[in-house]
View 1 (cartoon, rainbow, N blue to C red):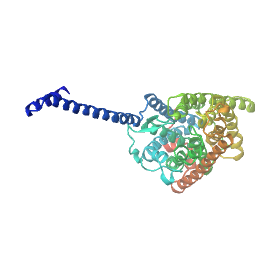
View 2: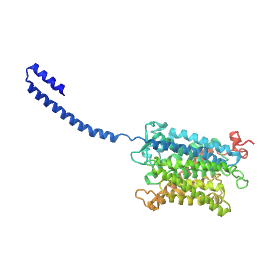
View 3: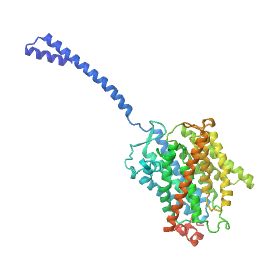
View 4: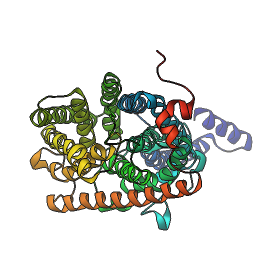
Length: 469
C-alpha cells in the first residue's frame, strides 16, 4: 500500500499537482480498496464453510477394515466351513462331490455377482424398483476405489467395493446352501445351470425387496438384519423343492446312509460359527456398538440352541449326540441372523432356545411324516429356523424386551409385517425353484443314472476319491 501511495505522489509532482491533494486522493482510494477486499472476504467465508459442509464423507479406516475382515469371515463360512460340514454328513463315496459343488458355486456366483448381480440387487429399478434394480452398474460400471456406499448412519460411508465384496459372499453362500437338499444324486452340470438361474430369478429379487431402498418389503418395514428371509428361508425352500422334484436317494429308508465323518462335520460347524460373526456383525456395516451387539447375540443364541437341541434329544433318545449339538448350533445361528443387531441378548437366547427343539422336530418328526428326502436337512434347519427368527424379530425388537426398537413400533403390526415377508419369500422361492428345476430337467436332466448314484458321485462324476486306503 505504501508503494501505491508513493507512486501516486510522484505522478502528481510530474503533472504539476499538489502533493497533499494527491495524497488525500490516494488515501481515499486505498480506503475504498480495503473496504472492497473486506466485503469480498465476508462473502467468501460463508461460501468456504458451505463447501466444507458439502464435501463428500470419507470412509473411516476402522469401518473399512471391519468390512474387509467380515467378508473374509463369510468366505471362511463357505470354503471350507460349509464344505466340511456338508461333506462329513454324506457317505464317503460322495465326499468330493459336495466339496466340488460348494467350491464351484462360490466361484460361479462370484463372477455373476460382479457382472450383473450387484446392480440388480442394489440398483434403482425405476418402475420395477419394488422388485428389482437396474443395469446402471453392469460389470460394476462406475464402481471405483473412490466410490462409497451408505451405512445405517447418516453421513457415514464405506468403500463401495467393500460393500460389493461383502454382499457377494451372501449371494454365494445362499446358493451353496441349497445343495444339501438333494446331495448325492444331482448332475454337476445341472447344479451349475440351476444355480445360475435361481440366483438370478430368486436371490436377486428377494435381496432387492428386503434390503434395497424402494424394495417392496424394505418400504413395508420388514426387518431382516443379516438374511433370515433373503438367505435362509430362500435357500431352505429351494432345497425342499429340489428334494421333492429330484426324488429320494436310491435305498432311502431301506439302506444305511449315516454320515461318514462326524469329526469333519464338527470342524465345519465350528468354522461356520466363527464365520457367522462376519455374517451377522458385519451386516452392521460399521465397527460400532451395533456390531458388538450382533456379535454377542451370535454367541448366546447359538449356545442356547445347541443346549436346547442337546437336552431335547437326550430326553427323546436317551443320549446326547455330537451331531445334535452341532445341528442345534446351526439352528441357533440361523434363527438369530435376522435379529442379530436388533434384539437384546436375552431375546437372542430365547430365539435360540426355541429354534433348537423346533428344528429337531422338523428334521425328524416332520420330515418322517411328510416323507421327503432332504439329504442334509436344509429345509428343517434353515427354512424353519429362518421363519422362527424372522417372526421372532418382530417380537424381540421391542425396547420393552431389550430390543433396539424401530420407528412407530407396534408388536402385532411388526409381527404381521414379518409374516408377510416370510410368506412372500416362501412363495417366490418355491415357484422360482420349481420352474428352474423343471427347465433344467427338460433340457439336460437333473439326476445322475442309477449306476452312477450307486457307484458314488466322486468317481462317476469327478473321477477321483476322497480316500485311498
